[in-house]
Length: 268
Image 1 (cartoon, rainbow, N blue to C red):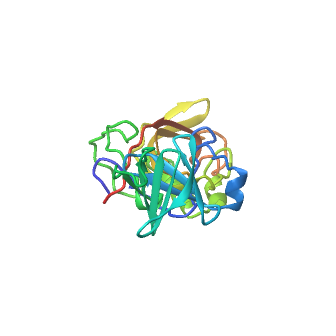
Image 2: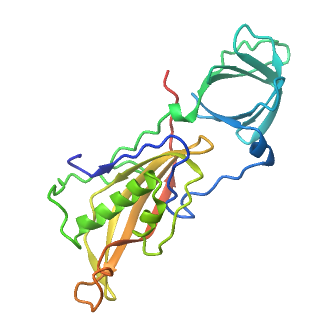
Image 3: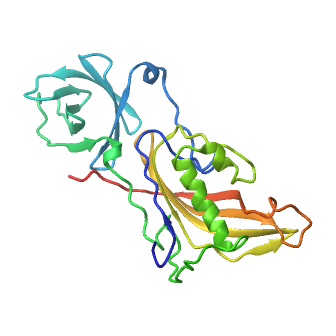
């Protein structure tokens, strides 16, 4: 627990990720080739993403910054080396080296950049007060158990929501949403979430509302890093309204998340 904000950190390696809203996190399109030949994704030290197809033992098809490159196998002392379309792609174990290849070269003189699988490049959470991060709130949190119906109880709902999503319990997580929507978890590789201290409870038209700051970060299945920051709006019935106890429980009414640039690099 941090003195300035409540933190929920969720790490998932495989394909268990959250989509906070249909607009906030969009699914990735797949090609017909990807359905039959496994695609290997790499994150390079300069931030570029390489997606590689190895349809046979003689070639490699790379996708880099929206462009496709067709490479053929070349002689190598170790590992597998591919050249073509002005590129050299040299792999060994689960790493690769990407380098430009001049038309007069058989082996690239440029050492290139190192590229590794996305799961080896965690995305760091943003600092409070920075774009996409939580507000830089210096007010210490109340560590006592949250009182039912309080703003802190609303923040606990958000923490619970992300914890359930992380564990794949989407049906349970859907019960914490006003729309009951069950999230599609298939488009993301990793997730981290920071949950901030809640704002003040406000009233309108027989309902109570509270905003909870959220920062969500991780990697898409493509390997690209993402950072989304903003707030989750929760709603419940007013205590004085003639409603059931269930209606007076906080539920997530809306995700208001903006996308921010997120930079991450492999560590040597």
